[in-house]
Image (cartoon, each protein chain N blue to C red):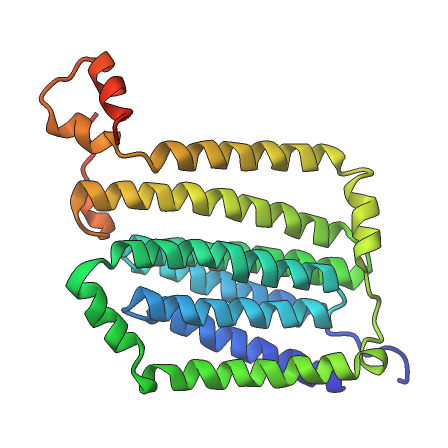
Length: 105
Length: 185
């Protein structure tokens, strides 16, 4: 057993799954819009971690490319989400997402 | 074996800081823990042999995207309540645990960088391989990502303007009035 000690893929994927679940719980439980956006970031980061670990397991670059695409998705999502957050703060005066439970056309 | 130990330390730091980020009351505290979680993820990326992704994680995720969150939190914490929040934020007790986590990660990254040659025995996929793949078979995905970023830019610019509140305050403004009134703000 003197060959390369590689991190087992199952443990990396397990870490990614746990991080994803923490982020999902954050989205479901928290009512602050900023914290909901942060939990979405945690979920996206967990997806990227899963891609990187899987790509490293086979020694190919595709995992990192998928991570870069996830990165651009996260950047676009956060910019639009924070713009919506500013509008919600102007309109409702608070960052509670329950304030926006009633939609008016 | 050592690499495995470093991986488990970074994974533990990542899990602990993520749980703390989701459960904080104060958004600024949650942001600190979230940044620590992203730094731990960057170390994990480096350990599994993806140095380019690790750099991108630090520069773009922990740098640019988190700075957006900092901007918005600072933007919304105006006035007296902002001062009170900052007073709470600068209390030493709030800084001890994030500092401990950061020091763990810092020691780990210093150790990894000093012994990178004999530590990274797995396959390392460097930036050159990623770039060759990115502008070879994945060039369409790059174009789609650029369109997505452009759409995000336009959406953020549109949503960041102020005229929505004016439309609600005035009873029924004609569209031309809304557009011309918008220019003065």
